[in-house]
Every structure is written in structure tokens, then in C-alpha cells.
Figure 1 (cartoon, rainbow, N blue to C red):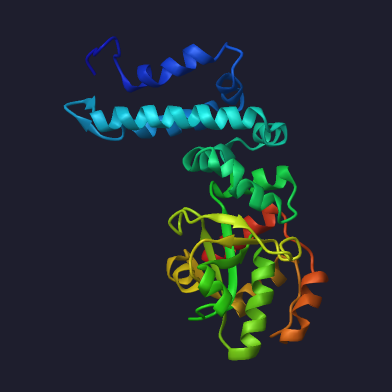
Figure 2: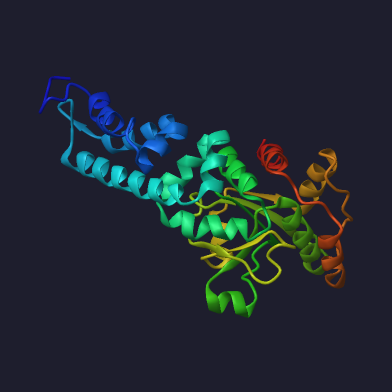
Length: 272
């Protein structure tokens, strides 16, 4: 690429903020200490379109917006030592945080922490999936109860074991229980907010879309029997063929909660 305004390449443009901030005592400099590769990849997205070998005006504008987002995320992380420390170990978690922007740290991150996961486990989960994994145990075509329909939300869990228990409850009623596997971005980036008063027991979050829309946009759907089989093969839990409505809470209380690695492995097996 010819030199334009002193810039000979895309790499030159991306290198500018790194040269300016790397050795400075700023929030961005601290962010670069544990996420240089992830920040670079995010900033490079602003140069996806070219005309005659040069970035478009839209691309440059997007680059500026992306750098603004990096700065805002850096400021928020600078005030959240637990998350920043976890990112040192799990740097790929920066990808969904940067894509979503600083509001992610005020809402989605808090919603995930409110499920009872430790901050390192939340960041580890984001690192593995590079997104927020979401699971919903239901029956095929269930529109949700009147309350969720009125609020326009879908209760979901970040633990597929929990979703399987609810799908087994549904199977006991209608015979067609399913486990839906989704991610926040895959669903179109709906709001993921704090769950209800049973959010720790159920590892629950509230997804800002109707249950049928969640089902239609989910990445994968598997039968509850296949979900049971996977959990058994992994040695996580042995669940019955179906669960009566009155027994759901007992199973929720007496089963383990899956680790980030187990959740990732469950999804790998479910979609293979």
C-alpha cells in the first residue's frame, strides 16, 4: 500500500495506539498488557472494506469507534481488579467484551456473576466460547407462560444440566422435551440480564426475547434424551427418563453444577 498521510499499511494505523499507550500509565496500557492480540484483532475489524487498496471512510470511522470502545472497556476494567486479573489467564474473554462494549461489564457480566459463578469461572466461560453460552430446557413450540410472554423474556441457564432437568420436566408433561443451545451473539445480541430469585439454584439469566424467538434463533436443538446421554457419558449426572413437576426442585438441589470446561465439552458433543 502506498503511503497516505504517513501511513504505509493497515498495520501502521493499528500500531499507532499501541505506540502511544503501551508505556503510559493509563487504563489502555494496562489492557494491552493482557490482551494485545485480542485488541489488535478487534481494531482490525475497522479495515475490512477497501477501495483501491485504501480503507474506506466508513472503515476509518469504524476504526475510530472501535478504539473509543477499547478505551471505555479499559477504563471499566481498570476499576474491576477481579475481572482484569482473570483476563490475564483467559485473554480470549476480551473478544466478547470488546464486541459488546463497556455496557457488557455493567449488565451481562453482573448477570453471569449473579448465577453464583465465581468471577474467574465467568471469564473462563467467556474465554472458551468467545460469547455468552445460553441453554434453555423446554418443549418443542412452547410459547412460554403468560408472565414471560408479557415481559418479553426467556428464562435461560448457563448450565446445560439445569436446562436438561427442565426439559425432563417438560417431557413428563408433553413427551417432547428439548434442550436449546445458543449464544448471545447467535441470538442477535439480546439483553442478558439478572435472573429471578432462584438464579443461583438454576444458574439463571433472563434473555430479552420471547421463548419461541429463542427457539427459532438457537444454534442447536437436541432431544432431552440425547442431553441425558451426554451428561451420563461425561460422568456429570445420571438423570431419570422424565421428571415430575413436583420433583424438579429436588433434582436442582441434588445435582452438581458444571464447570466451564464441562459446559464446553457438553456443547462439543451435542453439536458433533
